Amino acid sequence: MPDIETTCVQCRETFLFTEKDQEIFYQRNMMPPQRCAKCRSKKAAARADAPTRFEIVCDHCGKHDQVPFQPKVGRSVLCRECHEASRSRAKFA
Ligand SMILES: [Zn+2]
Ligand SMILES: [Zn+2]
Image 1 (cartoon, rainbow, N blue to C red):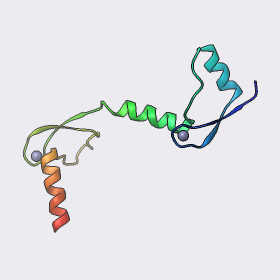
Image 2 (cartoon, rainbow, N blue to C red):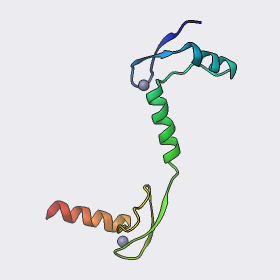
Image 3 (cartoon, rainbow, N blue to C red):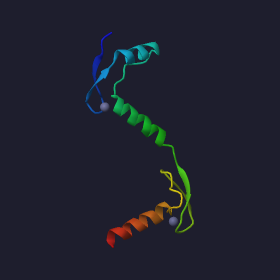
């Protein structure tokens, strides 16, 4: 089977559905990919990241909150309210 040139449904770039990939897909009885490798990995990353929440204790007011990123050890973390407050303070300063 030759390589197939496919257009990514997401970014509209053409990518190669290679002979090797085709074999894997047909063996697993999967639909041919509609997205290029870049968009596929982005989608996978988004899915993996989405449910991740890190429990934090606000350095400013002591409130418990959850943030979508891993807080750095030794750095102060703020709850959403304090974070917003410090951001708007910075904007108007
Ligand atoms: Zn793409
Ligand atoms: Zn706070």
